[in-house]
Length: 163
Image (cartoon, rainbow, N blue to C red):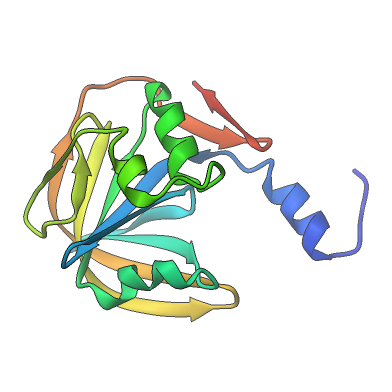
């Protein structure tokens, strides 16, 4: 195993080998909606049901996730590659065009829920921590929508894959 000095590029190269399930974190506040493709999320507890999601804190548009009192975590299947790509921001689509690529509903909090997500967690924001460059959002899951079981969309080696 080759050892390298720890610098941001080496760290990102190593992290690119860590596979993650692709999700969309979404929020609505007033007439504003935002969605971002993420892989850094996990369950924290099942009593009460709690998840955490990591977001880039340097992006000022991500403040909607802090200003609001809720967010949704939408798990994507393999057929959602185009949606994941659009919400990643690579194509510079505005939010209306990104949201137009999917069908959306709401559960208890009013956050956008992808109708055909593998699963969606509707969360009430309970805490935000700033760690280095990122915001870590903690949400109590207040409702869940289960979609059909299908192969998940995975991100690894800087590309989308499926199992």
